[in-house]
Length: 197
Image 1 (spheres, rainbow, N blue to C red):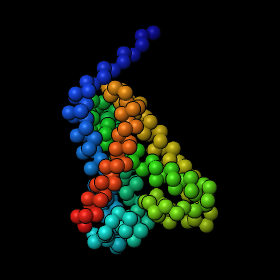
Image 2 (cartoon, rainbow, N blue to C red; image 1 turned 30 degrees about the vertical axis):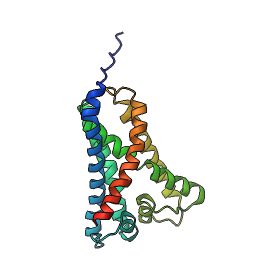
Image 3 (tube, rainbow, N blue to C red; image 1 turned 90 degrees about the horizontal axis):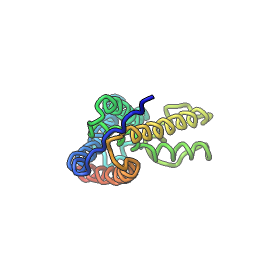
Image 4 (tube, rainbow, N blue to C red; image 1 turned 135 degrees about the vertical axis):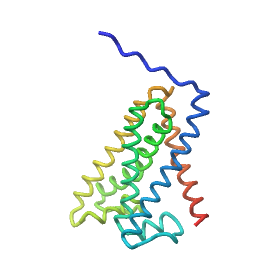
């Protein structure tokens, strides 16, 4: 029985020259798509958020469907870009877009899930917590089950994306650093949006 050959690792110079810009562009594209999904559904629901001061102002004043649109679009983009990455394993932008979109909502989703599980309510003002108003919450069990499924889906998808990035040397270390960078870059980009608004 023949063993499958290990995929050749990409050189570090190539990863810095092509991978870093692909990652930065993926973070920017992810945030723009997330925001446009909020905005589009907000306009459709009659609560346009064009004159917003910050992302928090938007999600607290928006229709629950508009707050759900951001995380849903992020999850869909993660799945689509991962599918494309599987068919084109050398495409660093697809890998970056899949990783960024799969991992970017992890902290918020898991935090809201744990709060709902332990306290039966959430105090966080994030897309996931405000989107829960779509689900009737006389009994929070449905919300806990949904958040558990979403949390597990995001964790598994993120791990699969990193696992399948076979051409990247030290992929788990790189993924950990990129995860931390994604959080920092998102905050910076939202602050830039805030200044431009």
